[in-house]
Length: 435
Image (cartoon, rainbow, N blue to C red):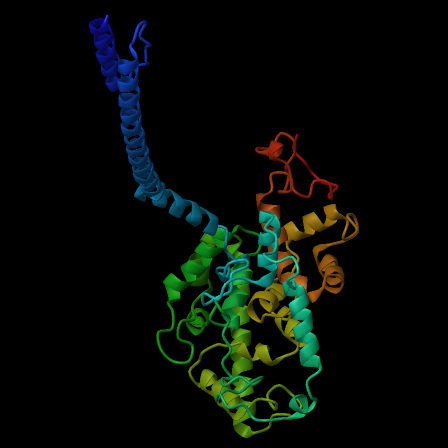
């Protein structure tokens, strides 16, 4: 009987070592049972330590797999796809009317120079993440800001009334280069005017081809005051046929070439007349010539002496006077002049092109049957706040070009009509439609 119990105990130990389920023996003596309990406790302790080691190994494996997965997320192929997506997004960041690219801003809420983010964005992020304040009794940022404002208001008034000159060597409110008038992407006002003229009644790609034709045919100034601008004096002295051949890829080349030639002749005569007045010292003190600084006067004289055709003096005129000066040129109407004012002279001006005119009629902003592009410009220039004119001009042009329901002559049979329109509930579409 004891031999049978001993064999059974050995078999149970072997099964436990192999990881199999414990099987109770039928007959076992008291001594065998005590020996079995001690062996079971030692094996159980060894099993626990083995399991703990297996869990630690599994944890290290998960960490390695996780880091490998993170590396796979930023693989070169993934980066190339992300870079391509960014490039596709940037394709649309072109200014209308062939006037260059939109300047890139910093992130929507991020402050430049690694200074964090704006308080408004932080508040939105906390709200979206449902993160409570660390201390319910702690003052909120808004309360702190209000208290700070109140403290500054309670400061002695002598700090506000003191007029000390600044000690950091700059000139607040006064430009150190008062006669430096450049137009961002476009080097000169005359360049911007010709670019906008070429963009009329054609696509952006065709107008860019036409302007590129002028550059290839007549070249850019590589020295002197007008460095980087088209050699407009060479265009002025060229034959009408040469100008036509240079811009014929842009459409309406016969009419546009005549207008360009006439505009350049007028600008040349104006530059020479202004030079003569400045040299003789006959400028009226109330005119823009009389108000110019000595450096500004010398700049205009040098431009005329070098036959650099320039309209940069329009920077010094009030908006209404600049508009009047622009529309006197052939082929330059209120829309073209307004675009030069908005994008080049950086004045708040709501230029109305065909896309904006169409959408404004559908929105009911102007009478749909009585208004023209010119009368719509006169009306919207008064009604739209100055702070919204630039961004709204850009927004409506892009929407009018890309929306499947708001493009010109579209209907229910047009491509991508089913994608809908973000302002569908606001517009009442009229005019010729497809489908």
